[in-house]
Image (cartoon, rainbow, N blue to C red):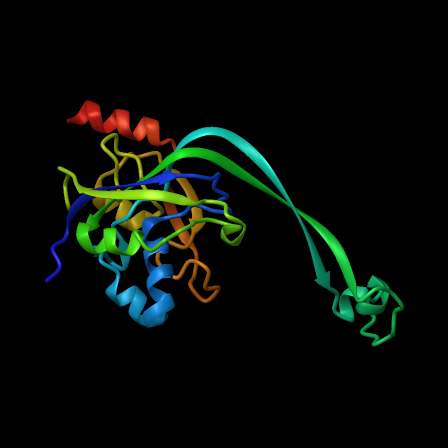
Length: 231
């Protein structure tokens, strides 16, 4: 039987991580489990507490060293439409257009060199550790070795199980939290607000974005100092 309690999860990192958007712990756990049990079961069985469908699991807090820029050259196949002149597409024509079927593209990514990444949440620490130990890399360009993890720890933490993973000790959001829920939690009255998806799956366009209180930063050192001061 799963036991849900507040915890801190720490990932020790080997290589820089590339994050296109805010990365939450539940996204990692669900993504890993979906490889084995499918999408629906991965959400249902994720070992995290939820509040109105929002997992009590924070975004990634980065113990950052430096920012980096990554360039990746790729060769992409062009569709017929992509090789047609814009005026022909606008007129609805199916005109042929001579050109190469493939083209080289240089993609640019902004990454962060990090020592460790910290997550907070409420769930089953042992079950979460079991999943994280199978995760080799996180973030974008994982197949190229970015976001590589050397080890992880998941330890119980003394915090309010109704709020931990959603609200930090200073009253700021630890992940995107819908505004109605934010008012119930009694967080800061002037949070940063963005329209984002608050519940998984975050990549699913059928999952509507909503106005959410979002974290002001991703600084793990600030988070750790705040926790030490609150202890």
